[in-house]
Length: 102
Image (cartoon, rainbow, N blue to C red; front, side, top):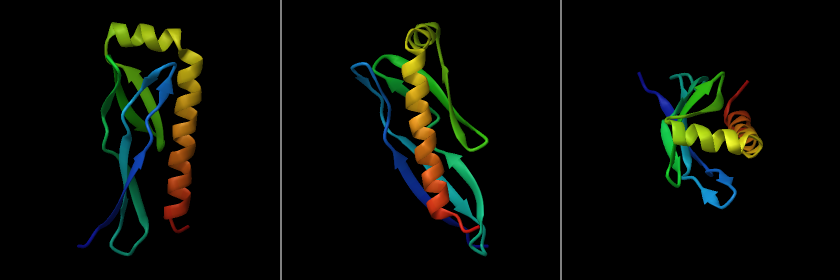
């Protein structure tokens, strides 16, 4: 069985003066070319010294702080994180829309 995949790299987020690394994901297709699933390759990333766990829920990115220091930073910058995650999720939806045959 032959499976096709497409890799994508999405820009990281910028909160105040801190920049995260990129987020990588792939789209998997069935042998007949129809879309199968989206896979998040970046499971954890850092925003300088703050570490966050990443997951997909319903195809959209979810960010969870991995320790108390990261949680405090996320809480202090909640609005900025919401905007940044919303922008990433818009990018994910654009990639899905452009690369899936309905």
